[in-house]
Length: 397
Image: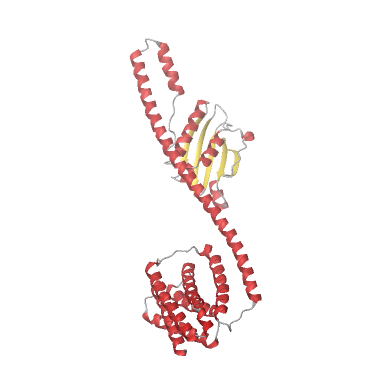
């Protein structure tokens, strides 16, 4: 039976070596031979020392993954997960078969039991290995941080099952109940940690998806606003030329008609004053400036910003709009907006005292700092948006 035991070990080691070599795409045949020899030596040592199946599983795992790590030069939890799954499956196939044929032990036919259980388990293992190599993807991406705790938990659970399973087959095997209890406590704690961690991951994922939906909605709104803006511009141009044509036909024969046309034209002089290549920003800020002009507030825009999604963010535009709400009537100001990285300087200035600083109570996380100064005969109102770096902040300020 010693020769038969060596034969079974040979088949099992050869199958495990073939799986590791083929699945992980080893390129050197010498590594196959070296891995086979190391695994076979481990099997024989465990047989001689009569160590239980858990020790053998961990030994197979350590030897196999050492070769994988040498070949791939980096730790990957996807590789660990697949290798652990295969080694556990390999041992459980043997355990299940030994339990299935265990009734033969009751009739004292040990030889028949060992032959049937051993051969059947190895045939199933070979079929299982061929199936995995053919159908399991060669590149399985496993997020390292997410699956570390899962892998540790599974290894402990499988170890406990392996201890009980081996003890059921090998009557001389024994285990310490205290160790089992400690392992179960560790598993319980890890399950709780896994639950908390995956709940956090799920929450972050849901927040990310909500953010994507928000951005998608904003982009759709942007396209709608653009289309409406183009349509309004087109209609205003048509109305303008129609009114000019009426004025020409009227030829001042009826002054009231000319006066009514001029009044209409003076109150409906919407212009797209901003062209920063940020469509939502350009349209909404232009609308805001035109509305302020209706309140006799003349604003000259001067923007130094590039095309960037942050300028089309509605929260950012709302802050700019609210800043402009505190400009006093009958003022003439320059609105200067300058971007540099994640920072944006919003600067308003005029020769007259134009800003109601005392009433300005803007609550926004985007505003880092605000300042009202008078220098060289010019009144300045400055806002710094989204900034944390002092050096850049001073340069902008």
